[in-house]
Image (cartoon, rainbow, N blue to C red; front, side, top):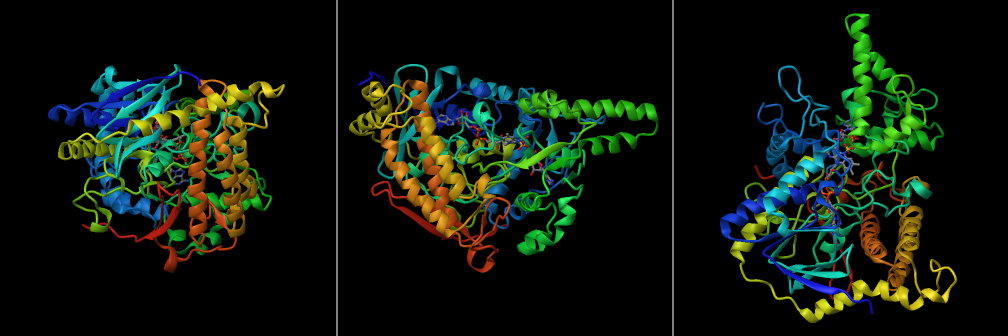
Amino acid sequence: MVHFETVEITTDLLIVGGGMSACGAAVEAAYWAKKNGLKVTLVDKAVMERSGAVAMGLSAINQYIGLRDGQNTVWDYVDYVRKDLMGITREDLVFNVARHVDSSVHLFEKWGLPIWKDKKGAYIHEGRWQLMINGESYKVIVAEAAKNALGMENIYERVFIVEPLMDGDRVAGAVGFSVRENKFYVFKAKAVVVAMGGAVHIFRPRSIGEGLGRAWYPPWNSGSSAYFTLRAGAEMTCQEVRFIPVRFKDGYGPVGAWFLLFKSRATNAMGGDYVVEHKDELQKWGEYGNVKPIPTNLRNRLVMLDVMQGKGPISMRTEEAIRRIASAESDRRAAQKKLKALESEAWEDFLDMTISQAILWAATNVQPEEKSSEIAAAEPYFIGSHSGASGAWVSGPEDVAPPEYQWGYVNMATVKGLFCAGDASGASSHKFSSGSHAEGRIAGKSAVRYIVENPQQPKVDMAQVAKLKETILRPLDVYQQHKNETSDPEINPNYIKPKMFMFRLQKIMDEYAGGVSAQFTTNEYLLKKGLELLAYLKEDSANLAAKDLHELLRCWENVQRMWQAEAHVRAVLFREETRWPGYYFRADKPALDEQNWKCFVNCCVDPNTGEWEMMKRDIIPLRL
Ligand code: SFD
Ligand code: AMP
């Protein structure tokens, strides 16, 4: 057996993850912990300055209410999110983030994030809720504040968290391993904030070969939040609500600035505008077809219809938008100047957050002022903080949440001491980077309150830890034991390498659960078959093999993906309707069913038997 030192850390609050919500949790928890003499520890699989979805930077802050200037009300935001999610949202959670999000944005500015301003000093908006930023160092700035608040002695980077530790029905910490040294980590804590983001590479991506890691969602978020909360026995929600972004093709560059700021059109190969030509389609989707803006998934649906009818590709008419804006200037010189400014804004939009799209433009001689660029629906992702909704079912804020949505501490899952934020908490979409940070702050403060009121350190069964250590490190032993049995160590009847395992998972999801190659369409038969194949995959996960620490990381990432995948397939199967046709379409239940399915689909796994339980939960409006 490969030798790994066991490192034990005892703390009060453990934050798992180092992204936007974890950084929010860190600054807020550090403040309240200091007042109460408590210790806060954070662990990230990567290095916080460049970890998570914001690693490459962002070109916009997508949630800002503008309460200071009376631009919008918190209620306006709740209304927007509910409609965008086809009626399925926890209004209390959205409300809570919306009333706190502006203060996170003001903190970012104070910490040094450049937000675009007009001549009068007002923020420049991309759309109603979005602010333009020079955001290539966004994550560096936010992480620095979190690191300063906690102190480096309380931060563990490059440690991959695998499993929760439990003391009966209360969380007691987490275990994981270093991705650089042979060390197994045991974190013992009174409460845990889960903030390990969403998941990518569960569905077969459009990119292949060397381009495999080029997806819209960052390749390093692998469903750890969902796995961790499921394994702790927490109730999960909206596992069917995947997100499919429409993005610039192959580089996955953002479209928001083009649609909202530059007011660009996108047209098909025949020059037709899908928003105009498929207007009637919207009427099939009840009241949600008539709302403005058109819900994200319905906008996708219109794009998908064009492609399915052979009218693709769809192109963003960058040249048309740039020329239209420039020609509105008073004279030729001003128009030329404006054209130059727009060109540089277009490039910066990509360079701030999706550098590879700028590289692709350069490599394919695209000048956006002259030539349009293809856009396409990406493969599905799990990101509850964006326009998807998957995550844990968490307790709502005391003052506005209905009693059915409250069990003590805000943002606590249905497991004692387990708090969730950002992508880890479900049914509260459109948090984005700023709202995730704000929700992290809410969860961090709430977790400290929980610890103050529940000060006893939960018990950790070290025999159980020893077993977990053996299971988690097993792929290294499997490899050593069998690697010489074939001439190519990649192929071996006694084990499966993580990359092959991932390909198998992706093929199942793509073909049976409505991925790109199935035109995002599935049905009961396909889903049941998919579950059968996932069960075989789960059996084979016991034979995963890792040649080094990096592959050990890959093994566990893929086991976590497999659990997220199963939760998704079960939820899509359970919900007998099509509610988000531009995210997935159930061909056997092709319509909205408001009477039976205007509800949340929740699920959990019994930690003792491994049995899944699926359930409906009511949608209860905000108590104002
Ligand atoms: O527009 C482990 N998002 C955007 N938000 C905006 O405000 N503006 C934009 O411009 C945005 N764009 C965008 C966005 C997301 C993505 C993927 C793209 C573009 C390409 C959304 C936000 O980025 C998102 O809402 C937040 O980042 C969510 O925050 P959080 O904390 O839930 O997740 P994270 O930041 O990805 O952090 C995850 C952390 O967990 C770590 N981690 N640590 C230990 N053990 C494990 N097993 C772990 N697994 C993961 C990660 O390292 C990371 O630190 S736009 O184009 O859509
Ligand atoms: P994106 O770059 O697509 O992530 O968009 C950034 C923000 O703009 C998100 O809040 C999106 O929901 C929103 N958005 C993007 N495109 C549109 C559109 N065509 N209409 C309304 N909102 C949009």
